Length: 254
Image (tube, rainbow, N blue to C red; front, side, top):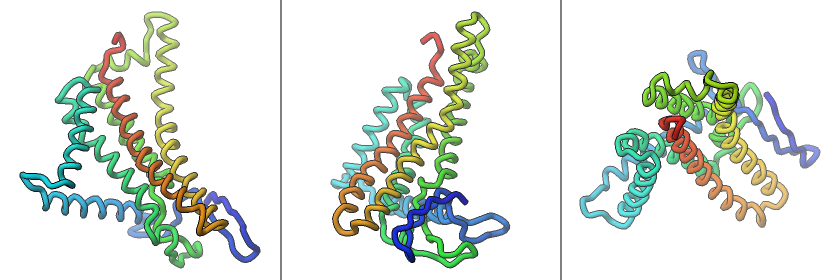
């Protein structure tokens, strides 16, 4: 396991692990603290969804009205960018789910117990819960979902014409541009996953170091800033997906 170790004192240290720590195995499948955290995130989302759905009213209160304005505003933004209501209805659930899942995971990073409650395992004392998007496996999984959604949408929309943007043999310039387009398409697997992972991981390390050195002064403002960054990264991830879907369903001539 790749680790970064910051030794603050001779007998005490702050250890930051890039990889998710292994807790146990279940039916041959490794259970990591990031996986456990994903279950917590899903449980929170299901609980909030149940409570909100149970309290829906025909005459909305302030909270329901605020939620409706947010969802309707985002849906209108998607419809305006994709240009078709059918496409907007198809991709709104995915794009909204990405925002809710990523933002919830980033916000839960700062609740008491995350990365502070430890278990004794074969690897020693490891945190029971880990910031979900600080695990590269999570961001890669989200990236693969988005990547294949974009590619499949382009093929279903344009048919085999979709591949003409990558394999253009009409002219040397067209062929060169197609290769660049293909490379840029594959690079998204790296840029998508590492952008989200890098921002959340670096923010967590920064807050941990500040907490160790100056526990009562500096951490609070940086934690508030990291909360903002966590929500912002969720929105950026979803909006990038929207814009790449728009590019995938658009003919190259346009």
